[in-house]
Amino acid sequence: MNAIRIGAVLLLLISTALERVQTPAPSSSISGTSGGGASGNPAAVAAGRAGLFPGRTPVYRINLRVHNGRSALLADDLRSSLEEMNFIWWSQAGVCFEIKSTKDNATAADGFDIWFVPDVPDPIGVNGVYKGDHDIWSRDDPRLMPAPDPVTHRAARTSAHELGHGLTLSHYNGYPDSAADLMSSGTLGWHLQDFQIQAARTRAQRKAIPDTTPTTCGEARIN
Image 1 (cartoon, helix red, strand yellow):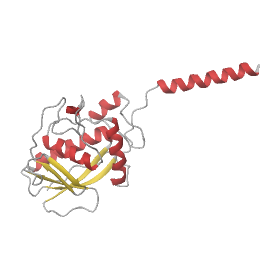
Image 2 (cartoon, one colour; image 1 turned 180 degrees about the vertical axis):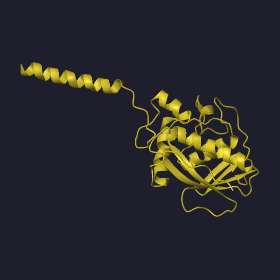
Image 3 (cartoon, rainbow, N blue to C red; image 1 turned 90 degrees about the vertical axis):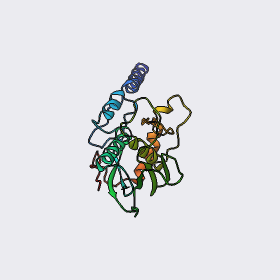
């Protein structure tokens, strides 16, 4: 009799374990309290890209000082580019940037600094460059190759790419899906791989504003 009871208990435990493996992970909550992600849930990925909720929670918000004193972009165009840049990161990785612009070259004490310019001064001819957290450059109108599901604003892609370097990501070149990837060189692609999301979130957590209650970043403040 004891053997039968033990066997029944083992069968119940195995059944429960199999059920947990076969059940999809729940979608991330917009409350921002879950540590889960959308990478394994196609419905969650689609909803994140539709702007319904962040791709991962909690959302890590990072201060970003935008230097537009030399930029040729109109304020509305720059704002739209920055909003798309934020969407690229928020919808996939649950990372976004609290943006304030300035006409001067004074750098911030935390977060990141990025300059928008008609042409990157060093090295000449590139679309953008990351030299350090407070030395990031993005061309106003980058020269980018076509990609599946491309971005709307070219400057959004380049700034999102350079901030990806700031979040520890390397280039993702030479793979079948490189053209669609944010970290490939010189394309209009904006998608992130799961391993890129995990690495970026690790860095973002250390750079972020301590309060993780908000699930989005505020509107970009452009002077």
